[in-house]
Amino acid sequence: MQPARRSVLIGAATAVAVPWLIGRAWAADAGTPLPIPDAIQVGASGAHVLQAVEGTRAFFAGGAPSPVKGFGQAYLGPVLRVRRGTTARIDVLNRLSEPITTHWHGLHVPGEVDGGPHAEIRPGARWSPSLEVNQSAATLWYHSHQHGATAPHVYAGLAGMLIVDDSDAPPSGLPANYGIDDLPIIIQDRAFARDGRLVYNAMGPAMMAGFRGDHILVNGAVRPLATPPAGIVRLRILNASNARIYHLRFEDGRAMHLVGSDGGLLRRPVPMRRLTLATGERAEVLVDFGSGGSARLLSEPDRNSPMGGVMGGPGGMARGMAAEPEPVADGGAFEVMRFKVDTSRTAGVRALPEAIADAAPAPALGEPVRRRRFVLDTHGAMMGGGRGQGGMGMGMTINGRSFDMSRIDLRARRGETELWQVRAGDMAHPFHVHGTSFQVVSRNGVAVDFATTGWKDTVLVDGVVELLMRFERQAGEQAPYMYHCHILEHEDAGMMGQFTVG
Ligand code: C2O
Ligand code: CU
Ligand code: CU
Image (cartoon, rainbow, N blue to C red; front, side):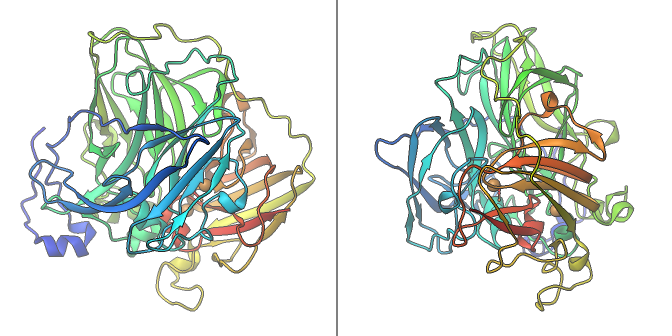
């Protein structure tokens, strides 16, 4: 593909300040090998040191270096692997000039080591949580959760994948050769100025809908190329974007077989042609590359917006903001990454498994003892209201209230099953709950089959969903759990609440 340089020239300084003037100057820079993050086994024998650092990174050959952040490296961090039944000790060292937190998204740990907004790590300080791992094998992640700065932190690179392994469970029969046929796929969209520098400026409409970039990165590389063996390949897909919802499909129509979701593996593979993944969600899929050749993973555009037709429609504001990547197919589908089978490699798994031995347990939560309702809303922000701060961005709400670190919104009890009804009317919001995994019981009044979703901790709410959950770990007033929209601009603007588990 040729670089689609815009004819209207804009200066770098302008581009940095005005995201909707960014040109697609770097469209040709795809196809570098898929970076595979180091996988680090974290056990009880000595703490693993995870340093939050500043650095620079040129995302394009010949492009200007961008200031970025990361865990132990410039942009993103290692894949941390923890084992069920062990205690993982991690020393997070903050070498940045601003406070961060480090949250273990999807890990069922007590509030005091959950790494939410109350677990602030000041510049130069160290935070040393001990994480008792007691849950099924799953693909989780970690990221900064600093209140008001989660969006810029994750955007700059403060995120990584976290994998729970369960050595007591029977072997799953799934591909498990990390980096060969078991690939971490961390998808993020980013915007760049003409000189190749990373740009982030979530103001006005970009804040209302959530900030979206028109370049797709996988594991930090622009639309990279993976070279799997000719066989069954497992993709652990994490949507670590700030706001973008992906509707993934292979260009040649080949199936993806869903074998795992947020909280663990499914009983049997669920074939699908199109996989929707909102921010914060994970999906483990098997793809058959047995016939060799090449394949391209695409996504349909994200039309999610509180201004519906105005922003989402063709020629609307979103277009002018260069919010959508360059289309490669009808309907605006764009490329996420490519695969080219390497026949010199040997596949460990050649046939799709019928059943997955290592599957997470089926839900047995019983009848809820309590029902709660949540309404997610962007209107306060749209009207410029909220918390007396004025301007957009301070008035995103859940049940009419913006997040307040000093207010406990609800109190739950250990071992009690609750039913949460979550509603989103203005646009779709990915709703995330800390401290546990939940069962999606229904979506817009229609029962959801657990076999197709598995355990979740983040769910896209478009209308109304009902979630059944139980908390087994404790979270006190000093370190409560969070529930929030995982569009990070919405979260930072107040679409978050906190709760204790006593
Ligand atoms: Cu992925 Cu409350 O976070
Ligand atoms: Cu979380
Ligand atoms: Cu939202």
